[in-house]
Length: 112
Length: 115
Image 1: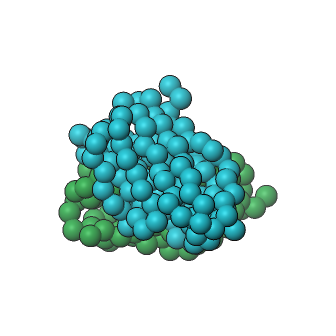
Image 2 (image 1 turned 135 degrees about the vertical axis):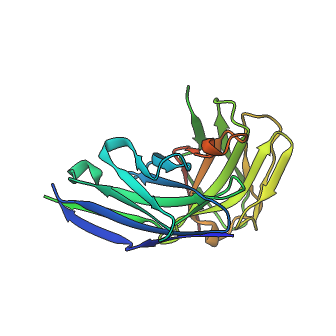
Image 3 (image 1 turned 30 degrees about the horizontal axis):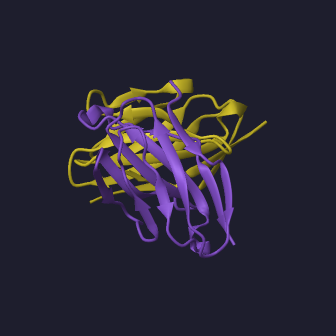
């Protein structure tokens, strides 16, 4: 069984500030981990994925995430927020099967 | 490549009506799936398929049917719509063979309202 917990359903940051979105997972097998972004009225777009090659994963739009096995975490960060980063972000885990289990999402607001 | 396409974009149904949400992909992906998205609950898996002729249930399959007669298409049928099925529905696809390719590609969604 696998599960994902995203801490904070809403996060607000000022433009130019650090973005930190938290994700903790549970998986009985070595996990594959993903971050997806959803802009209003659109589908989900892959930001980045962890597939055991490297613990620090770089994605699109300046985002990165670090896999920490000891903490069962996969937090998403971006050094400097931009107004265009405002969206909903989903963390997801895939174990031995192909099914993705999603967290409940974090709505990111960027304040001018 | 059109990627994953879904029709319709919006639909309003009355309780008890049936309908089919269409999903197609042109990437020759073996794995296809249907999710529903509800506020505060993320995406929940309804049904999935690992290839033509093979389907299985996900987390919330009740009230929905699927079939997979071709690699490209994976329609979702609502048998008798209920207000609890008001949601946004997403279809997704991916390669099935390589774990590193489990990333799924999502369609734009169908927003369904049942009155």
